[in-house]
Image (cartoon, rainbow, N blue to C red):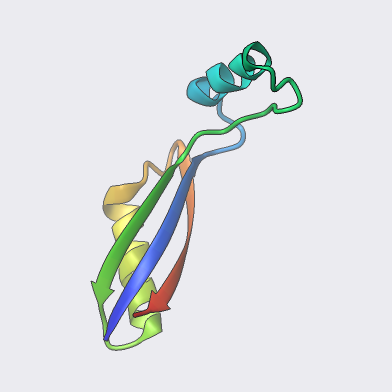
Amino acid sequence: MKFKAEINIMPHKALLDPQGKAVSNSMKNIGLPEISDVRIGKHIHLEVEADSADAARAKVDEACKKLLINPITEGYEFEVFEI
């Protein structure tokens, strides 16, 4: 069976996010002072072939841990859907 995964990767809350800070500071300059505390992350879409949804989740989790994230600076969450 084929599954798709939607993965969201964000910097840990305890770490400074310089890109998010720069965007947050720029909001007042473009007339949006009510927007603050911006955090910038990554969104990854992928497809995986697996026998079951549990097997697909395990493969996506392994891909995240081995390649897609830096566990020192980032956390992640994902959803898997059958297609």
